[in-house]
Length: 314
View 1 (cartoon, helix red, strand yellow):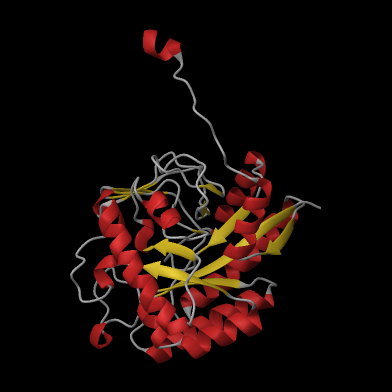
View 2 (cartoon, one colour):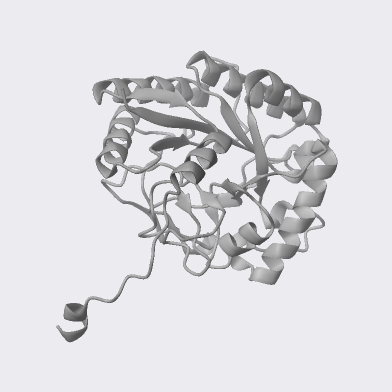
């Protein structure tokens, strides 16, 4: 039976200042809330046979290192670096990641790596920018800094205000391109896009997006989204077929009465149902697993594509 690799991920944000939650900001109000979110999420994913990949903001490695190490050793969690420049350090980076040039990206990621390493005792191998904000410098910077891979893109997202524009990008795992973020390339860095339903486009003001399987939505038809995503992945038939889910550590996934927790259970159930309906095995995986599969398959390499002369001549 064909395997569909299921990636259950969480962006682990630092507690918000003074327990506040500014509009639009993700993150727990305090460490106890973060702990409940992380432990509950890992436990519910494990009940369905899925490990969790946690992308950790640097400050959290100094606040919850023992918990993270325990989940890595006992639950098979994969740990990586998550970064919002405007949340980080002394506040001098007043930008989203895609709003920084190559020199600035290199500087802030190097600083974040040093903090992450000081907390965890080793360098991170995987990276995800906050809000999937990136530009054409990003993959080259991450490759130069020695990252094996991560999740940088979200197909269909067009959020210019967050420097996150991913219209037309590759929807399946691939190697990053050193010059053009929407295309696969030949860098060592393996990009694992967030999974979205490409069958429709939603608009919220000036922002454009496609539905994904995050459990945070106030209203979402998770059965339809899961069925469509699984069907679309199988129709594309990539070398490494993946369905990836994301959330944050600011909801109580240990509480079955919590709205987002209930949604997460529904997401897990609907992924299983969609895989069964399409006759494929839902196989739990982490970023480390998928990077290894892409490396082994040498997936996503592409050469130069000449312009179609008919398009130039009419």
